[in-house]
Length: 124
Image (cartoon, rainbow, N blue to C red; front, side, top):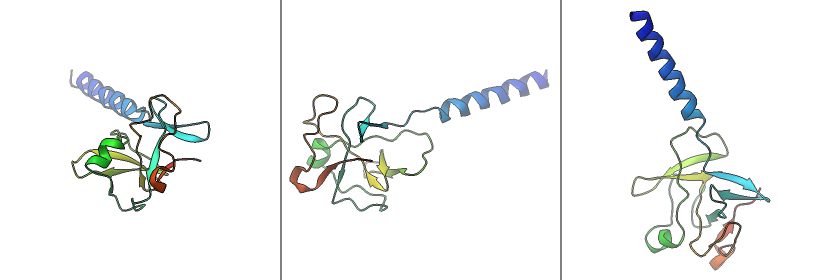
């Protein structure tokens, strides 16, 4: 009976690990740019310092430029996680936090590119 329980415990652990490893990345490359899971264009902000682990976009900025949320799956380079001031996890690319733009209404729109000369579409 103990062997069955141990076998079930091992199988459960393996299934949990494989499910966790299969978590999809919240962004993907499409037509030479990064987009989120809904196909919305992803941006970086010049005021963010790569590798600092922080986002410089808060308050009204964060309302207009929502953070791309990072899941719980382990990430490999060039992706990493930034912990925002509110404790949420934000996806970063080459150490720069990633955002979407509220004025992009349809997948593939790039209304935020070069906005105020500090927002940029993430390209390959």
